[in-house]
Length: 376
Picture 1 (cartoon, rainbow, N blue to C red):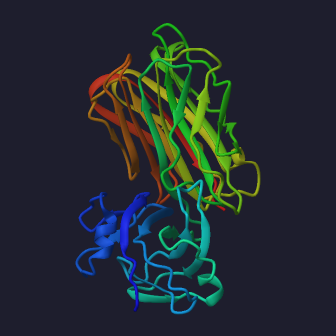
Picture 2: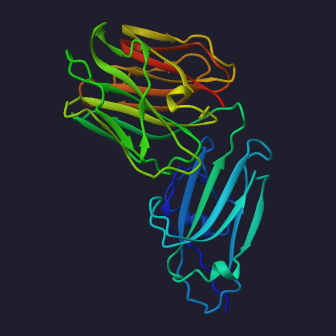
Picture 3: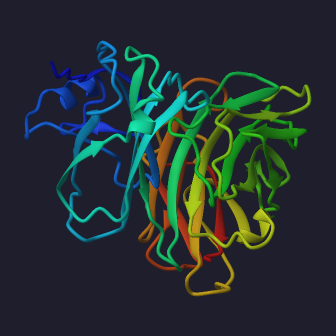
């Protein structure tokens, strides 16, 4: 008699949600067979992983007749290229412990709605040894057009606790290969003490290198008397995805009073040289007790290059805004701690601009950093 194993539990959800933007019990949405319910990946995520467990079935005693059925669609027929890899795995735990790959189907450049009846080969089906430990893993990838840069925030930290070491959480979906990873953070220190340079930045078994910020990377009450400082660390991934894991920013035993960070994956960047070379320029500036500020970059080295930026305010609720046609990635706010900070990460994806400007309703200290990212 045929057996049917339906989704029974969410395991890894990345940036996936249901049709109403809910993020709990996605497995139930997949198991109900209704056309009106479905799960979807975050549109801007360049890579997004969804894993759910299948219900236990009895060992059929044969290796024939195994089929993995699923359906996919894209919000706009044509449009940007989206690729989908669907895997059947046994013994999956998390993205660091994937278990055994049983079967894999790759759909390149999803055209629109389709139903997949993925019959397993006898060889693949024979690899199943535990029918109570099967998982489906979907990997959505937003393909990159040559000359186009795609910016995706994959992990953030807003921490106003006194520490000598801060940890940026491991990305939910993990970074992928052939990406520039930019770790942009703002650190605070006592009112009369400058923040120190990290003694090390480590994580994901990758080598992180500091990118020098010209202009003013520090900001505070007066020039030269600061207690806030911008840092940018950068690395790149090869064709294979790096190990999943958190990133540790260590200050060598020197206590600081808070750190706000955004880890950004950049697809389409020039990775032909060192990772720091993919950031053509990084410029910082600050304002003291005003409602606006700006950073000015030099002219672009290439018209395909784009701007990635961050702005921070010494205020937990300054009602901030970024001028021009920038797209916000995140706004991080810590109302506790001294000082309270609001941090915005943003990018300009449609064209290069030499200007990053910002404003707030209330007068406060603020500082920003803008980077020119080199397109491949």
